[in-house]
Image (cartoon, rainbow, N blue to C red; front, side, top):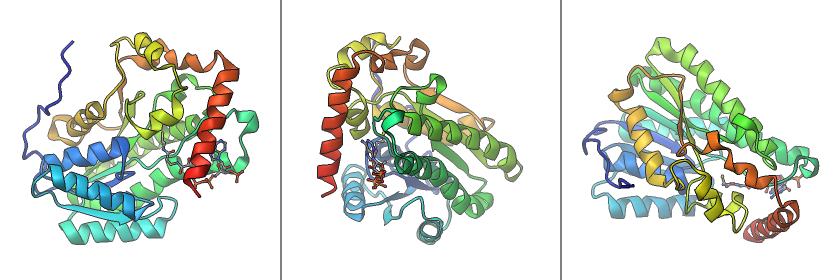
Length: 290
Ligand code: COA
């Protein structure tokens, strides 16, 4: 099967537009931010670590000649930090047209071992952080009749073992997307979600897919491959463009049919080796925080 790498959208699609992308310092959301820059938008990337954001900004600028990128550190759990981000993004570009709420956290842990704080931390980042970002951007989106994309997941559709925290958070994000679409339609604001399946070569996948299961996993996807960041970029361009001008309250799944087939059930088998794998990954995470 041919796998497209070039955007089918016009290069100048988003000239004169401005986007704020939380979680834009790495992974899928960095791809989304880069895709918007490639199509002419001013992009503000937001994350917790300034040095990571500065690297991401340099990467985008190296690839996209003339890209206008602002890199601002803020934690989506902090509404006043987000208010400041929106103000600076608006000052830099003169407007805000698009919000991409992508900041998220996840790890594998059985519910019976999950602390209340761990559960709450993921709810706070993924769900409350998305709410905070949407609220902080609202006044600007009203002026631009802009559009929101909340980055969600498919984990929660059937439930995924060891991810009670993320499943609960993303189910909440989907509900929030639908309610905001209902409430903000009167302002001309569209609110949609993108639900990526597992995406190859991202830190998230490294963290979440049990080691040694990738080959088996790919065979269970109806379209026989993992997603690429590029697939999510294409969905972003579509949803933010006028091609989707009547689309709101929609969760756009980009997963090759993965969730229908249900291969995340690899998680249900072989508990012992998955537990060892989780312990190794957690050790790696703890070491990275030192
Ligand atoms: N298993 C079980 N509990 C874990 C865990 C793991 N692998 N990783 C963290 N926790 C727990 C911590 O022990 C703590 O709970 P406690 O106070 O009861 O001990 C709680 O989660 C908060 O951890 P902390 O490291 O203080 O939170 P943080 O805000 O610095 O980090 C996380 C947030 C935990 C979501 C972290 O994984 C993160 O920053 N992730 C961002 C990137 C990411 O996950 N990307 C992948 C997306 S798919």
